[in-house]
Length: 515
Image 1 (cartoon, rainbow, N blue to C red):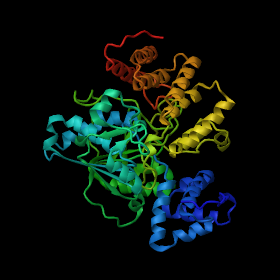
Image 2: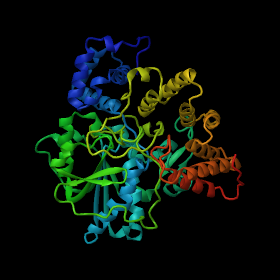
Image 3: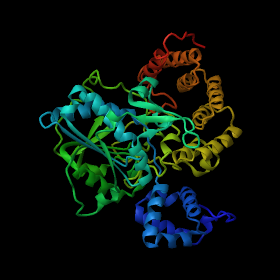
Image 4: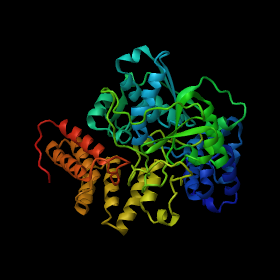
């Protein structure tokens, strides 16, 4: 806890900052911070304040203090790792998993009935639990005859504690229609001082195959690392953006060595590289790319049809910063085999705007927090707001949003994000006003209609919710099913139309009239 009366030090002017930064990058591999001093300084301020030391030199001394220093390193590594996690994130990859990759693996393993999956950089657990839900629904009644193990690893002890608890705020479930939340989760009551809005606990049947361990992906780059039993499927998303090119190649090579000869590897959207071609085969799929061990990959039918009836439908949800087609974007998880350094980060995120990005087969432009123009960030634009929210700084994101709205109160996207952030902060009345303002500015804003409908359901105003959801369906259908929706987390118009229709049907007899 910070000592009272100690002023906030100016770390940027501290002569000990540069060597401390170099030491942090050398230890963690987080080359991401080489040109992101403002972001690193924000995180160092938090740790220096929490450790009650005066400046960078004193903090560096603390980091060298034996067991106490190692404990502080663990806390710092968690702090500087920007994590994001929500369920069924990145719709294109989950579509590929549901329709091609997992069915192919299930068919190939039919004799032994063993399936091993690794979620590397699992953060607070949404990714491995999403996989558990999907595998359970694909196997259906055959599940008891299989031995399915899903390993989630992360560098953050705090994130792993949240993952093991399997309790989430509504923001981590934001792409799920209400009826699916009820199928996979039980509702938790609000607890004064702990959980103001209540939350959601994953049902036990979906937790069974999943276990968590602390791990750092940098060990894969070290020679002589023990391999262990190989995996059928590895997901490592939004991790490699932290490393330099040489480390990325070494880590991905290490991941490839951990695969079975016919296994599959999924990386983040910004992370493919031509350097992987010497040891991995790229498999193009609609909206994404997957990898298999080189020269060992048998053909697989892609897009061969829908998943079995028991499988869940396609859902919205993609990387948090999708931009216009052709640009890369960061995926779930976190750096250095890490996840979110904050256990509540999953509930404090802002989803993306823009269309879904096509998968890159060559180098892509990384897009993490502060990847946009720094001047624009300082001005309080959407990129800055997302970066703050992506770091779990919901309050700071809200303040930046107010600055941006003071400058441009008629910006439709800003009003939309005002609604999403206000709802995250429990300010439902402000959220409703903001979403309605976005619709006043753009009558055909599908995602604003959709989120307004979900909000009105939560506020127990079913007749108004039906009108909003009917509007979401109507405007989505007018665009065509494959149209990527602005501010839609990569969701297509068809996906949102289906989700809105399902939410509307769950309201039963409430009347409808498009407004």
